Amino acid sequence: MALLTHRDTPTRFAPSLLALLGFVACILGAAPAHADRIKELASIRGVAENSLVGYGLVVGLAGTGDDLQSEQTKKMVSNVLSRQFGTMVTPNDIRARNVAVVMVTARMPAFSTMGRRIDVTVSSASNAKSLFGGTLLPTAMKSGNGAVFAWAEGPLSIGGFSASGGSGSSVTKNHPTVGQIPSGAVVARELDYKMSAADPITIALKDPDFTTAARMAHAINDRLGAPLAKASNPSTVQVMVPASQKSNLVGLIATIENIQVTPDQRARIIINERTGTIVMGSHVRISPVAISHGSLTVQISEQQAVSQPDAPLTDGQTVTTQQTDIEVIEEGGDVRMLSPGPTLGDVVNALNTLGVKPRDLVAILLAMQQAGAVQADIEVQ
Image (cartoon, rainbow, N blue to C red; front, side, top):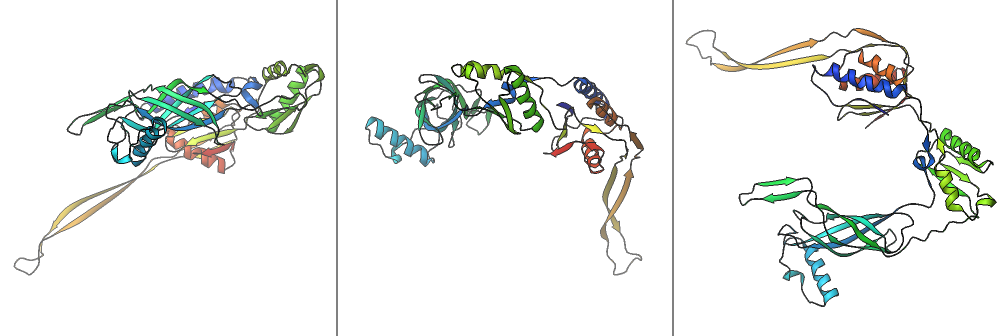
């Protein structure tokens, strides 16, 4: 993909910006399609990360924890003290603000063994001002089925801070209510995944496509020297395990992952109207089209005027009236002819000849698609 424009810029900078981006797009558009490893284009079905989540407490905060109005914090602290330490404390007895209720999340990689450490993210779940200086108490990390797969604990690393004064002034850097604990969780249970040589290896494409799936199956067959791979649909390729590799599944998968395949891409244009960003794919083409683009400016000004009676010594009164002036200014919209562009660089250069602002290109591209002059799918975000 190549970046065409980003945000509106002052008029004096627009031509140079578009020229620079056009030059970059020419380089990217002219570059030939490159091959990627299957490892980047797809994944082995069944081999996936496991999302974990936990609900715990962070202690040791310097008065920046949950305030006294947080009922969930009071109940959480009371339950922990009662269940783990046998200390009978009611929620109404909790007064300290150095504790915060948090949600702990982590991603457990596939084939993680017991004792392996993984990173965790700790986020405030109530109204704490900052988690700076806090320590996470041991927290059970559960998967979607409710099973505990890891335990997390340790001091938090916060990439920011928050400070406030007695007058109500405050200063905050980054996001102090979210922290990280590198290697903060220990895997306590392994995922039950067994590789079987009797079943075919299923390769799941990240971006389903008929052409890419067919190319992938053809490349695998060429590398293995036998018709073992078949694209059953645009999202999956199944590979039968040859008899000579049944005892070496890891080596076979490693070989398949490193096979080079050139993925096919649809011609697409992504438009973000909020920021004025336009991103084009290398397969975008345009047909000959004539474009006239101008702008209409309406200026409305109001001022007060005093109206006097027509004749003196009459019953008339002096009144104030509103006078409205409306001025319409229409800039010229010359008709420009855009020649067909075989590459992305030609498309960018053709659009830059219009001399319009980046945000105006959004309207032009949408109008060109409606006229059938753009051979691409346009997605507006």
